Image (cartoon, rainbow, N blue to C red; front, side, top):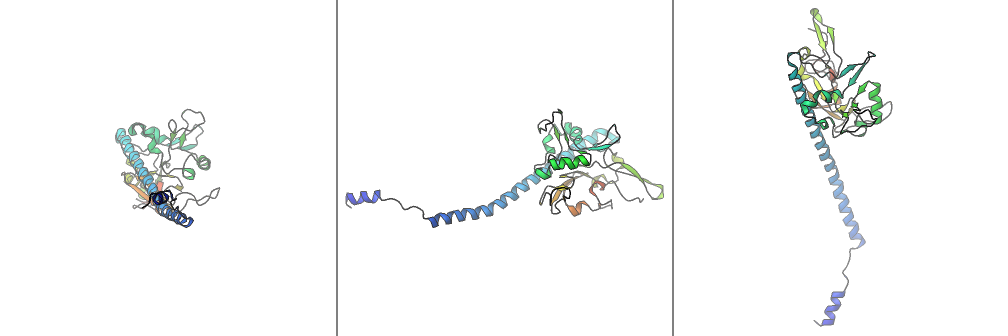
Length: 266
């Protein structure tokens, strides 16, 4: 081949992509992203759910150690506090104080990875609602008006702080009920009691989490599910329907009554 012709071929510009080819590539990438992103989101949610269940197990083990140290007079976590005014508050941050030594200072276990926005106790709207119900999940240790996760006490998990009391049963029997500070010997079915739950009371965090709307008429999303720790250290997942049903022994139909509060029968 003559040298001039060879040099001309080497200098010839290469053919670039056409507009149609570029659009096809972009369309293929968009299609792949639409297929992968839901899968990645589901994998992320599954990972958060596993971490949450692990947190609950750690709390359960720490609670068992706490109870064992009390001996024969063991009582469940006294997170319900009576103020000098006589009013009671649900001081759920106290669970961190009571279990701290048994969890070796691992306070991150009280921070659910799925707790964000409307599903977090730090959400301004939730703070207002919790305050109205005398529920305190956060303690500003330094009283500096700032909440810092490394310093302050933040409990994103519901604690069974139901009021203790007695009711009259048939045949002259008296039944104890409630969990906050209740002695274990008076809790009829401790293994069935719900100790901790991954929710802001009424707001689920997993699989359809969140609220159906906001404002005074906000309602929990009925498709959401919550993780709960039972007295025998089982971690279970409940729908809203399951959560407000009696336990297998016929308790009252709310989760804080499971294992401890039953109709007045022998």
